[in-house]
Length: 161
Ligand code: FES
Ligand code: FES
Image 1 (tube, rainbow, N blue to C red):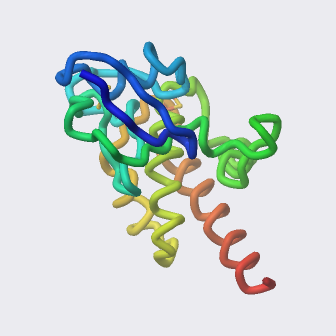
Image 2 (image 1 turned 45 degrees about the vertical axis):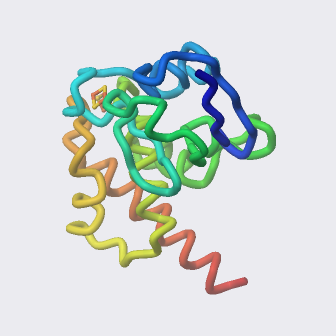
């Protein structure tokens, strides 16, 4: 069966079984290996991507459920054709929000959805936004700091525009 998606702004077509995981379609069929597999059971959030703007764990989503959807992965964050970091990625780097990095793509996508929603970047709101993403390294504080920094810069930029 052929499934059609729009991935990071580009049309993509894959001929695969309908129950193939979106995670495998992204990594193996489309070569987008930025999305990581941690638990494979919907618990860790490492495989988080956005589908039609919603946060999903791609290890639990069969491709047949997302036929025709718009998918955004960590590769879609980078700017200037992938040669420059997005402001959110730069904030993670500055604040020390990435250490081993296995959780980072999923954290970035959950944070991307949080920023897009435009909510006030309080500690509680940020921690709620990344509640489905586990990190074994950072203790979360630096990740929260990074997301707050990105949100504040975004708001300042919007105010200046
Ligand atoms: S790999 Fe999907 S939630 Fe852990
Ligand atoms: S940076 Fe290592 S799991 Fe989060």
